[in-house]
Image (tube, rainbow, N blue to C red; front, top):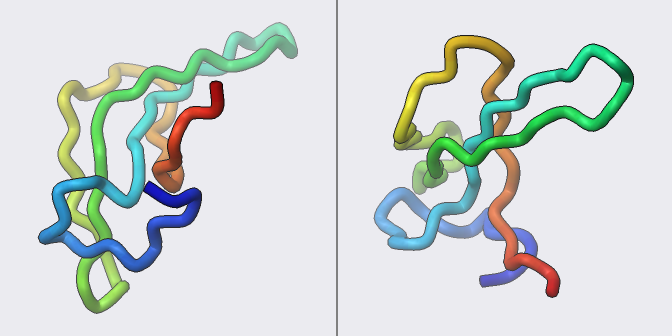
Length: 71
């Protein structure tokens, strides 16, 4: 997987984006990021198919380009 997967389509098995729930801590510390799903870009580049494994009750939902983790 490359660092930018913008050319992947909804038919691809590898998601182009990762879905996170982000909860701010309110004390200027780093927010909590929890992976809650994946997203695949549409072939026409005008939308996404999003698969969410759980629905957050607070915080926000953020989509980020999927990339390999650096070790």
